[in-house]
Length: 370
View (spheres, rainbow, N blue to C red):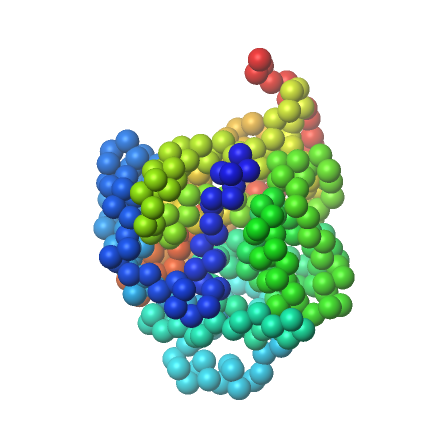
């Protein structure tokens, strides 16, 4: 399972590396992966809207049309940077449009594939901005973070969502967990690059298997973010290694098992576990992926809702109605779930977001697994 988690490269990697490293070309598209997209057995892994419309597929295999968002670091950005973004035609995302969107979080979008240069890590110097896919901020906003709250980012590397959380509020305690040791080093470097020392002191970084977090810290957190390892439709389509592509295709079928376990790990006779168990009663849990796969998105959330009577779906449709100018949303069949799909002129996504709440009533389930 560790190898499986290691191979699920977060799409944010493509947005935060040095210039030139993510300038993929259509000629580098992996043929087996694209073929898998089109074949009927594998097409069931994607939502019907994604397989019926050519636009998401065409955008995902055409990096030259990808757009880039600029998340300003509120701890170290100059006014001149904002002025420069305005002059280049960038506009703000979310500002004042969502009731729980902090005024301190500033993200700028371009409607063209323009890309700001990446800043390199320099020890002791805070970066001014973070490049990302704008849709990756939706899980952060759905969490409705408030000052002083205890927050868990269960699968935190490479750190973009942790950085975004800290742009929204000053938590009393932020636990950033990453199971893979290489990605853990990346996470630490990201936090060091964006967060000043006084805030670093309220952040804990750990290397636990996410499926064990609930047992380690039961009912500890006010908010839990599970940005789960997934099949990552941005990166998996590009590979020069056909064996690696074949491995990823086979792993797509296994990922939903891992994702359910991260949310609710069953051990013998007692559950809930992991993210659900780590969340205090009354707290919010946000689950997200960067894939179009229904098996990894809606089906995972349905499994959690069907097996936990203390977990309630939270209506999240307001985000879609408010943000439709900048994002294209596909139907999910769930009031608690959103799916951003890449579209012409709005190439953000894919990003699935589901919002759940833990009620004050709890119970133990008896499983019949032998």
